[in-house]
Image (cartoon, rainbow, N blue to C red):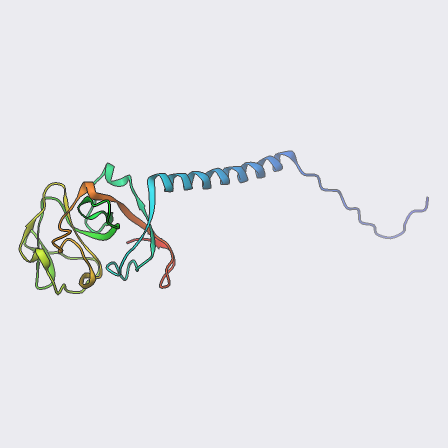
Length: 194
């Protein structure tokens, strides 16, 4: 048999190492399990709903879908600034309302000259909200009970909230959960609710 003259290149056949196959399989299966568990947790602990109306603009817009945590308020109470989802007066036939907590249990709330006062002191808020044209029932000082919260929409002059006589202070047992994540809308991409 004649030998070739010059340089020759031999290609080794690559063999798949069983440990590499096992590692790849474990990563794929682990990833699938993590995704499955995330969905189970989000949909058993959480709930999906839509915002109705423009009362939470610019943070949330009409028709935008949000995720809420239904368990957090069984373990703790809403805090000032939380965006909560509730049924007004516990009315099961109503749609879910989405508003921001302004007043906490035991506090005295009043709206004067378009601003919120808590226990007689002007509320300093992180966001810049429009002055309220209509103080509603908060024109006179309201004292919240030990299980009541005062809520307002971020779009203060286009919101039916605790200033309205048919809603008033929101009882803790009518709060369904905390809105924490919003889906994409025409104005912005998905993200956490602040």
